[in-house]
Image (tube, helix red, strand yellow):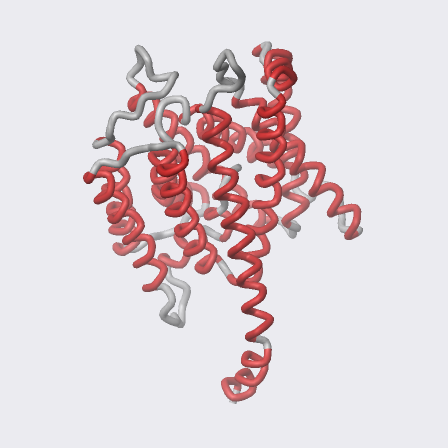
Length: 347
């Protein structure tokens, strides 16, 4: 009975759904692929005739967060939604601290590993999510979840351990792969905690998405600004940007697409669910790696191609398996959802 009544409405709304899907896919692909390319350009390509490199990753965090905070505040005021904090401020700050550490590790890792290596390593974020989900949310996972995590880890390990020589200005005199792997491990650990704790906040409080974005990014602004002042990097970063106007343009565009991506991500998860979002994100990562290899001339060894096939093959297989209707929510769905927030990027 319910089936027959729902069919006409679903068919009549299919054109609308197609436009919404096109909007969501285009928005995520354009913003996050652009973000990835700009991120690599800022951290790895020299500026000016003297070939100076931008080294102040915390400044990028500050610019991204202040832009996102301003936009989310404007949205809350325009929509006349509650701007008062829903949860205790220290909980927003905890998310903010781990988010800053996540993003800083992400930017710093680009000094030691290539963007394709970093992007593929991000696919392994389900492992810390599963660990933190067990510790914080008391979630339980089944054998297919662990098999998927193992395959993704195997593919990432092959990709990282068998690189073609990739010379970059920061690798001289350093074990760049070791430093890069350590930073990416920090990224995965902090990111897993951030998304899991965000999930707990959403479930523990009646919290609107923009309310959380505003307060976490506001805390991030204060903390990152404090860090820049303490390290003495604020004036140095501002001077670099002042002397290199193309760097200023790159950072402004980076902050813009980072902010826009957050709203496209929220829209996609709310409209189509975490499963569709995961498939889009997997495709985006694959496109980002291919574009980075072409744009910045990163050669890939045949072992790395095998590693990439293992990772993306496993992720796509996961998406297709979970398209089958299920009567009950399985632990596999929990890994996929994590909830929705465990799948979010941390620009």
